[in-house]
Length: 225
Image 1 (tube, helix red, strand yellow):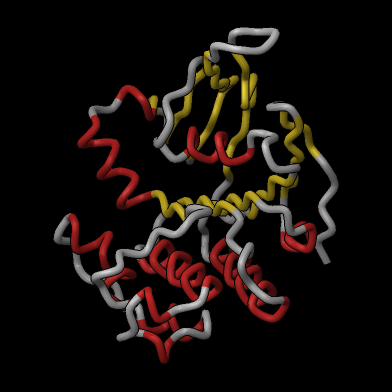
Image 2 (image 1 turned 90 degrees about the horizontal axis):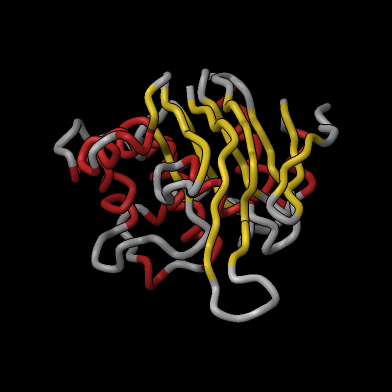
C-alpha cells in the first residue's frame, strides 16, 4: 500500500512577493489496491509534483510517504530504485522511450535493468493496439503510439501500484477509452491505480476522485457508471 501523510513540497525562488512557494501542501492520500483514484485540476495546480512525491522521485519538504508502513524516503537510493522498478509502475507525462531500442525492448527495459525475468510484453502491446509495432523504433512512432508504449512498459512489469501522469494526453477518443478500460481492468486485478489527468471522462472509471488547486487536494464526485 502506498500512503502519503501531510506531504508538502516547497521551492525557494529569488523574485516575487514571497521567496518560496508550495506546489503541494498538506496532502494526505492512500492508494487502495483494487481501486482507481483520479486526480484532476488545471495545469500548474501541483498534480505532477504530487505524483513524483508518491513515486519516490521527489523528496517531500514535509510529511511522509509510506510503502507498506516503511518511510519511502528513508530507504537508500539503491533500495528505493529497486522498489520503484519492481513495485511501482510510473507512466510519465513526457517522452520516455529510449531511441536506440525497439518498442519491445523499451517495454522489457525495467526487467532487463535488474536482470529479472522478461515479461511477456506481446499481450500488453496488442491490448493497446500497437502489437504490430513491436520491432519499430521510437523515431517511427507518433506521439500517441509513444504514449501507449510507456503505458505498456509500466503494465508489463506487473507493479502493485500504477502512477500515470496524463496517460491519455496524446490519444484520440477511441484509444482514450481503450486505455481507461485497461486501467480499470488493472484495478480489478488488484492493482492500485492513480491517474493524474485533464480528461474528465476518466471520472467514469474512478472509485475515488480528487481535484487539485493551488497545491491543495479536495475530494470530488466520481461519475462511475
